[in-house]
Length: 302
Image 1 (cartoon, rainbow, N blue to C red):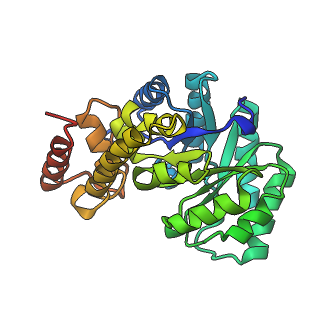
Image 2: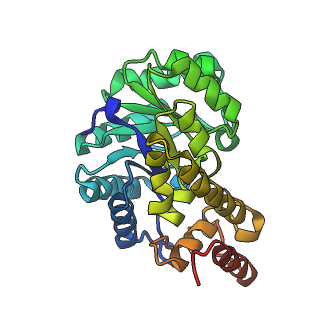
């Protein structure tokens, strides 16, 4: 296992490739993760939001966890997403992840419930007390309907196993507040690195957990973190603008429901994206044409 104090750099929430009939595409999953690691990826989140965690059965989740650990073979941080609604249901997956030798788990607050702060703290405390495994707290209010304020994150940081936070509220001011409040206490990772990775690290974050940029641009996007740390800000900013353009092109209605457009774009580039799973529909012919044009505009395909 890689110690939490060593967690830094470019992490990504990897896609879960499905076959056209909806079955898991295990070969594509392994090839994508191996390719990213070869390109310099520092960490991977398995069965996160980009991994369509809500589409995955529990046996499939266990299979993905196991394959990820075997494929990475210690070459990068591997964090699993249990993805369950209750603390009680998350605990067995946290234990499973620990027994596999995963480096940690990523936990979101329960969606739909809209829990208050004491309920959020109890949720994380229950898991913290049950399983001794490093926890990455994930704040994604747009998808979860629950916003973990900086003050709440500070209280969560007091739990023994909470070692990092992914702040993905799409509010750079919020990211800066979290860095200022918690930097040095736990590891701070920004979200949405496609358009704020560089400034997040400049402000003092330990890295980011991206998805679209790293899996579409590969080594080019992964290199942004090291360029910033090496002081090559101009080179990093140039790549950041390309990531911004890619994000704008592939996260709108014209490119289907995310991550279908990303997966199609990856396939066009010869990267193993696979298909999305219903109820996310395949791209229409018009949407495919739009994605293809966007990639040509970025010189990512001919």
